[in-house]
Length: 86
Image 1 (cartoon, helix red, strand yellow):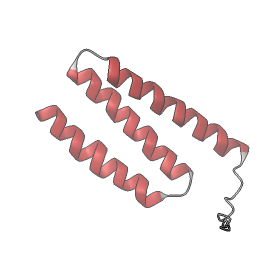
Image 2 (spheres, helix red, strand yellow):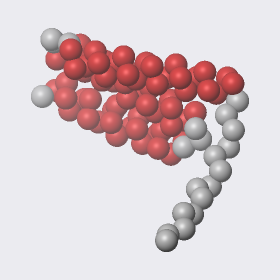
Image 3 (cartoon, rainbow, N blue to C red):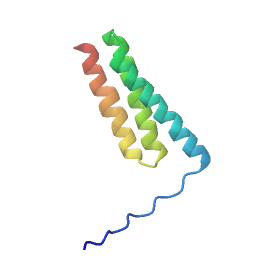
């Protein structure tokens, strides 16, 4: 019989932070669906950029500032510019 190790308790979210995370999650989901169903490459790139900014806002909202900064610099900056120029 194996014993389960309990995970570290997550800090409680304030109601404002929970609302912010829900809005950013909905924005990321809608933007991802718009990327999948857009017919023009430039529109898809703009939707993907908004999705990645929403994901970085989620990272900032939960206290992972380094991941949020990496998300903006690497994905939104570098990969989206490469996508637009190709």
